[in-house]
Length: 322
Image (cartoon, rainbow, N blue to C red; front, side):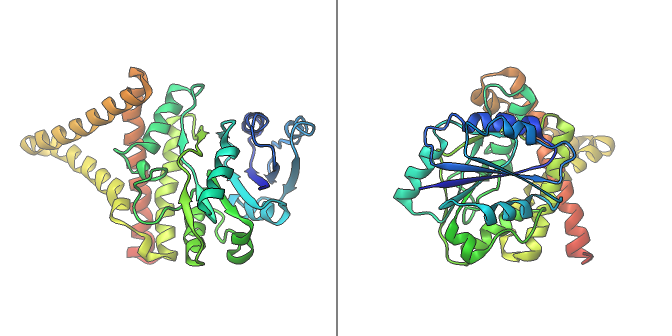
């Protein structure tokens, strides 16, 4: 099996350098790499050129069109039997392609997704953000977990599709705002088999500050409503949890200001919830500092997603504005 690894890139030369360095170490060597520079001002051509003799690599520069359409640009130029999509802020374990190849031969998936984890080199904030995005105590637990809600939808930070999927289902029709979920649903509607490869994990750096993380999760909350506009049946109860949590936080603040007896009850439940996150994060990361930061990251994840979700739910569903 020959893989085509497709990586859209926008103003992140340092990230692609680290990702390509991890691909050099792959134990399975039947793959090519396509870097799609999406109209960057700070391009990575000089970085990519360093790997010309170490990887089968191709570099393309195109006008900016967003990550979804940049992946399509790569699909059109790929030679592989299977196309693999990574975000530029990922590090790839050396046995990743070997794990994927073996799993695909055994299970015959047409499209797959894999989980993400925190690398030992990540900063404490990055580890806390990784925890918040993968923890069973936040909605992140459904992103790379065997026990997800409904059918598994591969996410584009770590996703693969067969050439047949590309030829019959096409590529991305959205370039942002939930483009990977829309694509996964459409792949399934064409009758293709999708699934999670649990061992095919990547180390996803995501964001390096809580402010960046807030902006990203606010965007994710809005993206969920965009998916709902295309596929109403895909809006599940669990997707409302961050909005419910956010409303609960607002209610708790008001209770503390105006009605102390109710405030005690609200404070108790929030304290218990954050204690569960703290001790679980401590167990996972073996670090008190990361455990404390994980409380902050989880709070940001839920409230940012919840506010973005409510914003577009009111605008696009209640008031029906485009």
